[in-house]
Image 1 (cartoon, rainbow, N blue to C red):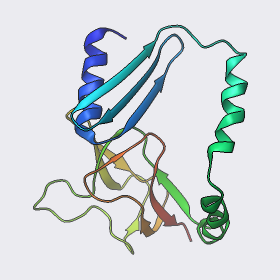
Image 2 (cartoon, rainbow, N blue to C red):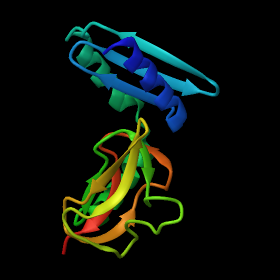
Image 3 (cartoon, rainbow, N blue to C red):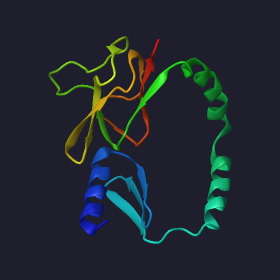
Image 4 (tube, one colour):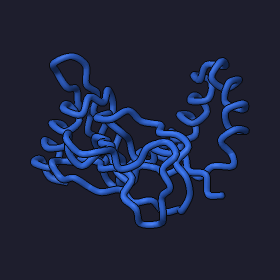
Length: 160
């Protein structure tokens, strides 16, 4: 990854409104934190030693508050019968092709495999996100024009 790609990534993250983005590849680790006007970037170009990784994993569950964990089981029971359409990329989520057009998918819309359900803008490229499942949209999980992360749930679909 060269400096121009890193600068582009920093600008994209600053514009998207995300507060923190972490990118890890084989030989590079980048963390971009934004707050207010300035963006803080940490770049580490060496893979972390294996001895440190287990310590970090052990600390992460301790930092999680107990209240969301208690609420999660009730939510997963209701949502377990639904299929989740997730974001394949980081970007800005849009429900319609342009401001004057209708939404691609609303709650209750029947979708087929290959139907466009939304657009995600990443680095000035508009990527149509297609449904990988046929069924009925039961819930839209992201607000229009919101930043989304990789693998973030976007829609719940009832395949029955």
